[in-house]
Length: 88
Image 1 (cartoon, helix red, strand yellow):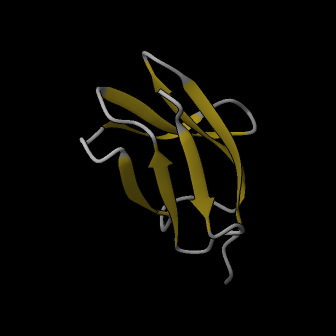
Image 2 (image 1 turned 30 degrees about the horizontal axis):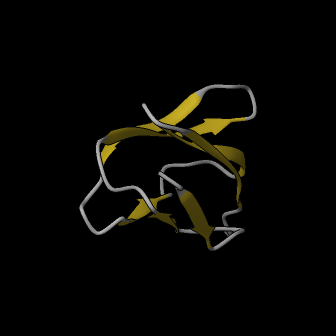
């Protein structure tokens, strides 16, 4: 499978939208990891037959900073650097 991701908006304030294209079968682990390597958020996600999966991740409990979004399945590991900047 040729899997690609798009994460927006960057920088983010209240949420990030994650679009995964080309992923048609199986489950994956989605993780948000801080710069110290700690997993801040983790969720198991599943594909659908359309090949396009859209996920909205709420950020209200996430501190300002820089994070890596990691999507890992048995087929592929995709990592995207994501900056989360909250406005006060």
